Image (tube, rainbow, N blue to C red):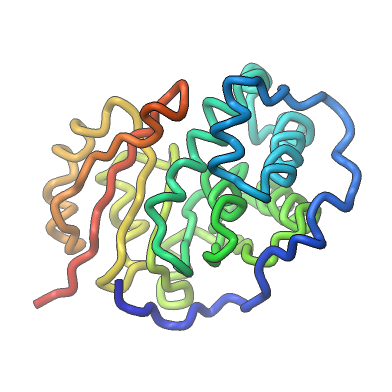
Length: 243
């Protein structure tokens, strides 16, 4: 993939192993345990950052629910339905990529990917103040030097944030997502949208918008087969420079 322009957000060093796990875990509602079934996949996806991933899940189960970013019913299935479901997308990121996560919310998938891929840089784009405050708090607690958080709507940072990859999960349908994400790629790179069973229908409904924003033919990828109890569906759309 061609080298992307230098991003406008502040460059900071990535994760340093000596900084991991030095603070006490957040107090409050206990995080769901990492079961024997999920421990192997979690180690494979997060590697040395697994202790930080466990701390992140503890944040989700505690302040994430308290602040309204995660529904209480999701607490028992945070690992399999949310965190691992997002982290498996890390295999699609190029080495040292600049990644923009649109509508980050509770850091899904942005923070999961930042933990799994410390070689990459991430900017989490989120318009709601309370969610931005939560993301800032968690990023600081985890000591993530490869993450920046920006309070804005995606369309407000076009020209300021430039990415090799744009990610999104549960933001909006493809026909609405493409106008928000493709301009951040500046004619090269790709969108990785985590979707569900409606992916083929969303692609059909987005054909006209896809042509308008210069996207290549979308691919529907299934990740995590043989590794996770629930696979992840990703719609990958490569950007094409205008002729």
